[in-house]
Structures are given as C-alpha cells and as structure tokens.
Length: 335
Image (cartoon, rainbow, N blue to C red; front, side, top):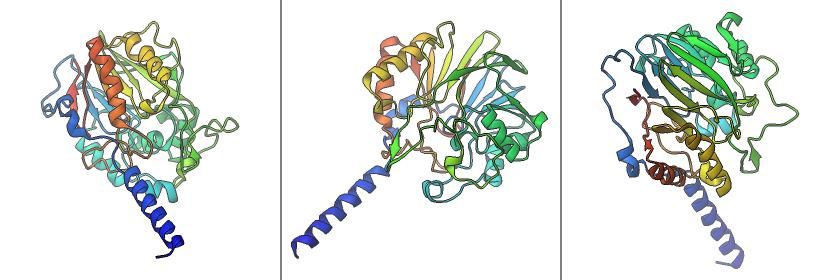
C-alpha cells in the first residue's frame, strides 16, 4: 500500500467516524427516566384542571376539558435528507392521525412561535382540519394564505393584547430566536434584507423559504394559574420583569453551545424571573424522526442534549424547582 493510498484510507475512516458520530442522538433518555411522569392521561380532565400534552419540538396542547389551544402543531416532520436535499410539504394523513391520537377535537386556536418550517409548516392544515383559528405574525399569515385558509380563520399577532378562548387568556410576548448557527457552512440566521415572508407560500417548498418573521413567547392565564411557553433558546432582557408563572415550557435547544455568560443570563431572565414551580424542557427532540416513534434527543451534529439538561438541572436543583420531561403524546395535569 503506497503513501497516497494510506492517506486516502485514513481520511475515509476519519470521515466515516465523523458522520457516524454526528448523526447519533446527543443524549440518552434512559439517564432521565425519573423526570418522565408517565401519568395516565385517559382520565376525564377535572374541573379547573389543565392538561398539557407534548407533541414534539415546541408543539404543546393545553386542554381544560372544554377548550383546547395548541402551539405550532408541527406533525409531518420530514426526514433530514428530505429537508436538506428536496422540497418539503405537509402530510395530511400524518396530521390527521396525530389529531386523532391526541384527541384534538375541540381546538380553538393554533399559536405559531415563529415561521421556520419546524413551527409553521403544518399549522394552517391543523387549523383547517379542526376549524380552529391560526394566530401568528405576518409571515405566518402568508403561510396560511398559501395553504388556502380564509382571512376570517387567521389573526395577526398584536403584542400585549390578550386573546380570549374559552377560559384561556393568551398574551403574545416579543422574544428572540435561538442564536444563529452553521452546519456544513450553511446558517439559519435571518437575512436582514429579507426578515419576513412577504407573499403567500404554497407547498412544496424548500425549508429555507420559511423565514423566521419574528419570534414570540406566550403567557397563558387560566383562572389563577399562569403558564409561559418559550420555544426558542434566547431572551429579551427585562421581558419577564413583571411576570410570574406557575409552569414554564422552556426551549433548551443548543443551550450548552452558547457562551457561559449567555447560559447564565438565559436562566436568570427566564426561570429566575418567572419563579415557576415546574419547568418542562421543549425543543429538545430530533424533529427529523417521525412522531409515531418515541422521541430521541437532537443530533450531535448540532446540539448536546446531555449538556443542556445538566446546565438546567444544576440551577433548578439549587433553586428547588421541579423539572419534568415529556415523551411524545405524553400528558401531565399541570394543576
């Protein structure tokens, strides 16, 4: 074997090991078994209770037995290869199967956190199939128009204005997207010259055609209880200065990849300000895998689930705040 052949073989082995490692899950859920409630969600929801069901990424169903509201509703979950190398589109059969399995029969509103495909792509179809209203930014509304929704079935966000749906009151809060990152030289950073989706989008589309269009958190009040849903791992300093919450759904994707100063500020500006008694991590799962299978942590290619959880658990343990994880379709009664 000559020297050139040896070098090529060595580089080939290195490339194989890199790819194999990069496309593995970035954590082992068995290490966190004690954080999964594994409750029986088949019981009737008691009066005054709120049941939360996790449907992957940042799709969260809240149900008080009378009214349901949902964030995002991203259920099609095209594969990594489809997303990277072809156009993608919603799968009506998959969407309807999730709606049936999760018993989404009385949905009144779909609230979209931002307009990247893993949040907004399926939302108009969820709204259409359930006769719910789609709530979002102007970018989300353009996705809705492209999907054939009527204007009366959509409503553009008005920051700070409460939306009443049954006994739920939802207030939209301005937020920030997880800091930009690069994979294979490509970035998810928003082009400042094209920050929004300015015309209707009709599927199939490239994933990159789904532009962020602003990122939002949701403050949800129900009687005396308060819930905050924060899908993206970023913050606006002072945004929660006058807010408290009983439960915080907290995006943790790529938290450990940020500088330590960012990690500390993120916790201080979210968990420490809101003072919840319960934190439920979201946007931790590999959304290139189907929802029909048990969820797995994000890929090592772009995240580190174990390190993200370690950062969160160190601080919440010190502050005596409960943390729980939810598998796909797993529910928990919050109150």
